[in-house]
Image (cartoon, rainbow, N blue to C red; front, top):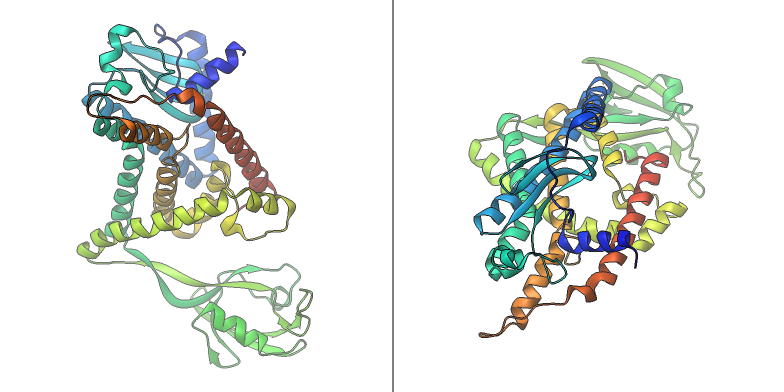
Length: 416
């Protein structure tokens, strides 16, 4: 077994870096590395302010996740040796007491190093009383779930902020065009994105589904009269409908657009804002559970890669893909839309992190729970984590597959 593999394995089961805390790291490497990270954020802010706000929010969420572990570990009497933002080689660090704080080169996460996470995590015998594994079951569960709990707290605060300041995003009863085929009948007739549809042939339109039904009530070649509102002004457009290009639907009239029901933020009472922050957290949590099951299904991922599945609601997505989507969300709904998106991401990450397998925090929680069940009044049971290493490595391999598959799909078929 190579030293590299051993180090990687031990870091997986320990929940963070196992390298010895270094003396203060700085010099040219720190200047170049930190300068590059700052420059990247500056370029991002100049290129697209909404993506910058979203990415900054993600970084803050990661930081607060680790703060949850850090604070609860210190309060529980556990020894913390490192608190790092980023992974990989150190760029910059400093020590305060026994703890090393700093930044590492790869901005793909963060970690707090707590000694003695399990039987494979070697510690100085003198430090055993302050090791994670030596503490009571309630304290271990408090510490290991603190990161996910922090994500839920962040989500509630974001929801409460949006609902209190901007209100809730509710349908306005208007239907508008959100996509127009370049060479379709609507484009040739002069229809534009964001045109609000008042009526078709004199029939008022209030829902996107109703609009589709009214188009399909025609036959190819018919002329449909659209009453629209563009920039606050009424516009009438006559469109000669084409033939639907989808095989099997040739008898359906075709306009060449996608429509959606418009919504806007509407003020709500403070009591409703507070209540909705918690009820909507529950709804988001349930949707996230369903999303995890659907998105992490290997069959589903393969179908997306092969093109057999085009349902983007089940498509795996990476931070790159969500960041690209945040640009559209920001342009359409502004800051409140970005904050709501961050709330949803925090709920998803918080729940995924509690999946009961290593290297997730939920894996450590599962081990602690198993040890508690097997323990007796006068005999504390200690699980042999070495038996779980093959499973942990399999999970890591699968996560790498999901990451690369998601990144490929983000590039070739970005979420819209």
